[in-house]
Length: 179
Ligand code: PRP
Ligand code: ADE
Image 1 (cartoon, rainbow, N blue to C red):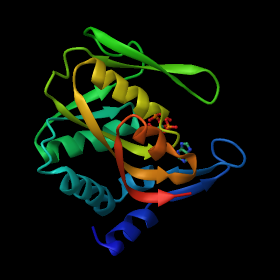
Image 2: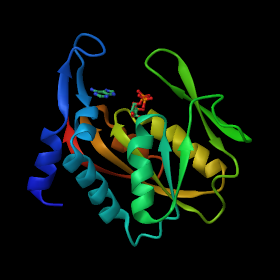
Image 3: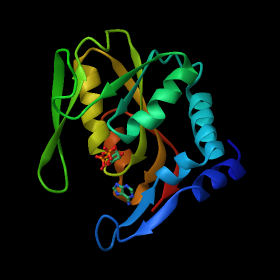
Image 4: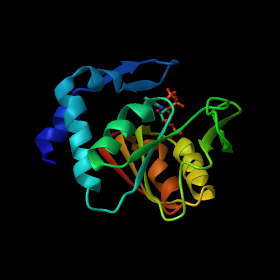
């Protein structure tokens, strides 16, 4: 990726003050999705980064992880596996709880969607605290998959998600960094 390409992507992301509450500067990836050149470039750069790395499945987490994970899977020529909020997946699932700012939520993965020997890439729109992807990684490992890499469009580096994922043996990669 060139510095110019990454600057173009960064400029396509609108920043919304005081959303969802006062003091938060929300990095809105929907403005990137609305720009077909920015959307295509984000997918191309992620596919380029992970091509020839032996990835056999891409996992994306509901909901915004689907928007980037599914096209990256197509670009890599591998299957896409959704991790979903509780009660949405019809077959047998593994479930993991994770911390939210207030209370906890749960994520689920179809037990038979990942097999031993799968080398899984996790894709999401944005890395904040890393809680969502830590839970996602635990689900993939319970299903027998190997996961060492997670890719994001945006990293909010002040929230230290990369260090949290590193502690789980995950190397993070992000196209755009914001405080
Ligand atoms: C957002 C975002 C990431 C996660 C990042 O999803 O899409 O998945 O938060 O935060 P973390 O690193 O602190 O876990 P959200 O839970 O808002 O759900 P959505 O994709 O359905 O909007
Ligand atoms: N998730 C957590 N913090 C966020 C922010 N500032 N912008 C977008 N998504 C977020």
